[in-house]
Image (cartoon, rainbow, N blue to C red; front, side, top):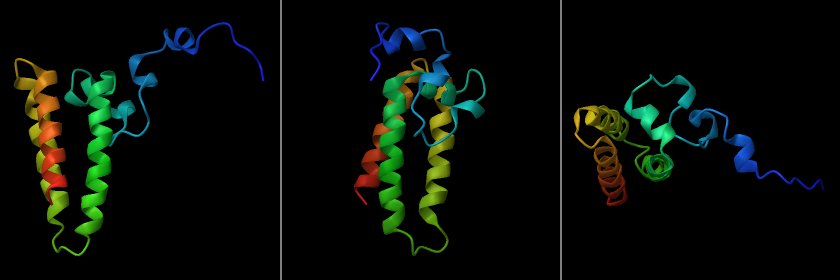
Length: 111
């Protein structure tokens, strides 16, 4: 196994922030608009982690609600995403997005 003297962090330091984010987000960082809430999530590790947590909780809730007609959970989630994206209007966008994710995670876990 080769030994590298240069830490991997230094090798990645020159790459754009979007390239270093986890691939498990609920959306593609390659497709986001500049200045959007989704771009902020891609560039902020704490928000990316919340997105990953929500995706996992949503998958669990979706598995339990698979027999609903029409798919209410999916419609609710689309509405939540629209609300989350309204955080661009907030004075503290990061706090708004964080709060939005935490509330949605708690809401889905309570089902």
